[in-house]
Length: 274
Image (cartoon, rainbow, N blue to C red; front, top):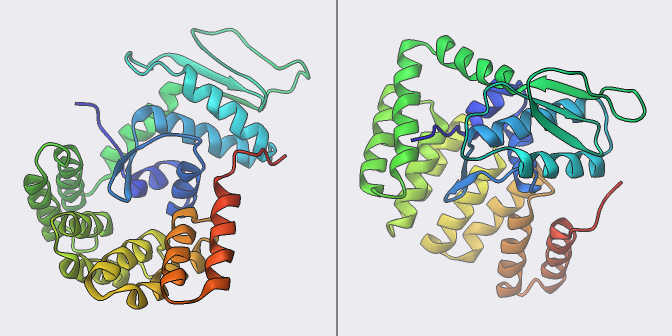
């Protein structure tokens, strides 16, 4: 079964923040699987994010980055090994080919040019650098990711084992919370999310998940503060705007509801932003 990577693992591999990884995924530049509200990134997704990081660092305009990476995502072969492929992009076009041979855009400026094997080496380095305890926890966490679709009960056991090995493994705590919520235990989900926030209090996604659980466990008023905190940490969190708009309507806060609906519409629009 192909390996998938958590948000934290992708951030560690690429040397970027967890928030950057989540924001890039939400923008539609790659299409990771969803494990509830958490992402599971394929190797193809990792290649696209690697390219995104380099294009952004070279200050390619956002709209050009989007065009280039959408082309890259469509070009990467999903059902064959990526070893030996070379990716080249200038923000306007992308080529992916086997073997050597220099390629430059019409301007003569090479903006992005890397071997996909370099991304595979990052993954190998990650596994070599894992400490024994951390490695066991990460292995249990990855096992949970792979089990979720077919056996949620076994997935919960795997995540619980990961937390036993590494109590600070926030992704495992969060996924335990989500599976508890999916099983109908919103109160237990809220407890686990609070526990996760003790370790990473500025994680917008965990505040969002907690708001979902509190909405079911205690009603809309209890959830509002955490949707608002998620947006304070990530103003472009479209789903948080949408959910908060609905709660504001229920609570008689009409002006706030309209403001958040407008923000959601703006963030989910396909209009380009040069």
